[in-house]
Image 1 (cartoon, helix red, strand yellow):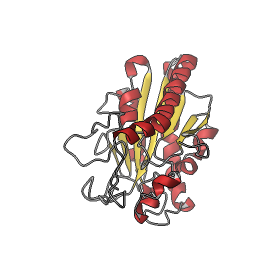
Image 2 (image 1 turned 30 degrees about the horizontal axis):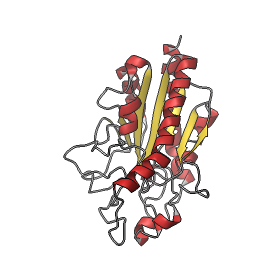
Image 3 (image 1 turned 90 degrees about the horizontal axis):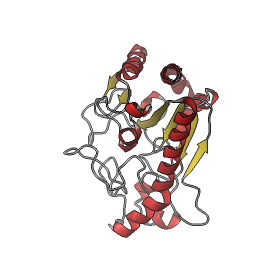
Image 4 (image 1 turned 45 degrees about the horizontal axis):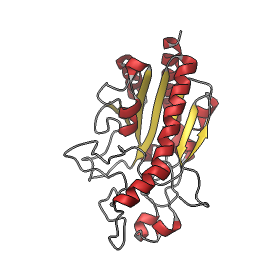
Length: 271
């Protein structure tokens, strides 16, 4: 966006047939844009906090890791480029959000981005992330014959705007079975359901966003899964949004089992 802005993503290449994408892990907001935000929005509360730390083990497993640097308040990497709703008829936030998950304004004076500003953000941040995502999936498939995409997300466990009550802890999404082989999806669900102290669901409230739906194509040997985790499973859900290592240690073995199952599935397909 400017010469002093960070690149749109950080990428760690791996050797396994698995790519872990973290499209909502970024917190960067350009200074001029932050000046237009409310005090609440400057805290970027709807971030998928600490994803790199939570999934640090994935790098050791040989997975490729793609991490966003910009806040979703700048541009949401898990939305279609035309801003179309992923859940028609339900409350959602947009490609360049104008309100928070608590349904409060992001822009203090109401000067929301116009079409030109949205296009500029899409070109500067959204497009490079997706180009890297596409290129790495193609590279993995060329090398291994198959690729698995794990789209890693987290969210507050109670958000009345989007769902009633408390969200299950482990929300697996495969676009209602279209983005991933059903056998892999069921194996992942079984692992999640066996995780004592956690609740799990497949294709419940969160079925997978644009990334899962756009790139998952089992017929082309690309299998995409989104995991939307409750943040209380590993961190504080309110300011200062601290990572809680002793809490995270409880769920990380289950995350690792799911990623190991995804890698084993891919390796079996590539034989």
